[in-house]
Image (cartoon, rainbow, N blue to C red; front, side, top):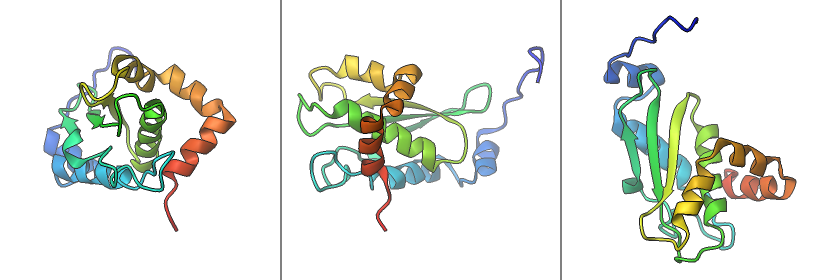
Length: 152
């Protein structure tokens, strides 16, 4: 596609159907189903068990002009000074990117007021270069893989 060609926006419902969803709620439920199984890095529980992720924290926004859905995921660390909030955000991002077979834009945020350094962490977990660098670190990658792997 050359730079002069424009992507023609598809109707929202047609785009969702093309991606394999009945509606935005179906997409939201698919995302939540992937999130709910992520394990906490420190505790023997899932993020769903700890109410770190919750269905009401997933917002499917209108697609961009280039027909890419924007999904905002909000999560709530268990304590306001959680040292693993960045790792949890990274796990959420990697799990969703691997779970959905199509391109969506993910915006991942800590619930407003839920963490003492939420602004800094939000910047980190939404920065492509930092995410790529983090996943190149073997120790960090192993931690993420252990948190996001599906139980047999």
